[in-house]
Image (cartoon, rainbow, N blue to C red; front, side, top):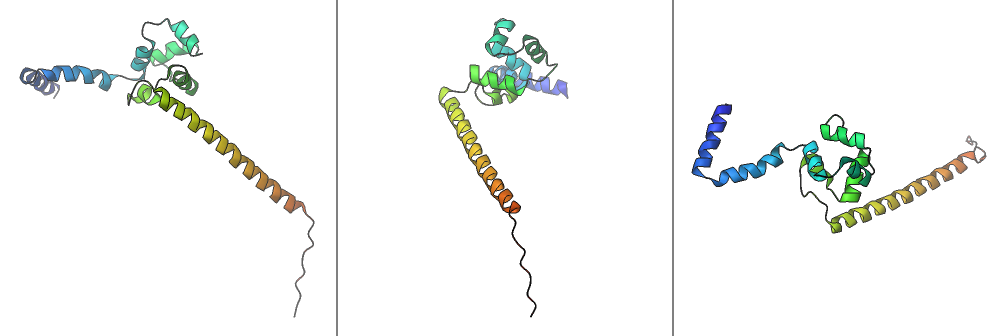
Length: 148
């Protein structure tokens, strides 16, 4: 089967030379994983300096690059906040490598609005629970049923 694929690819390149260029462009996308994309982000930078830039542990960064451990949520957050790296690109290779400033600002604003809404909802629930608690502590005499 593999030989058929290789022969088919060779024939395609012979007939359509541009196919080779398309294949080379797609190859990196199709076969890259998170460690490859991390290496692309770091580039020729010194690992210690890069780790300091995003407040990460250099030994953890080395382990991420080797694929021995998965990056933490805090690591992803630091890449997004400090370098504007798109997490969907980093994890799955989907979309643009960088978050543009407008969409990043929008994400931050939406996050703040969600936090504010959550605080308001939490306060409302707490207030209602407090009211129920007060009512349950009242000494209300029980009404006796009157027989006819």
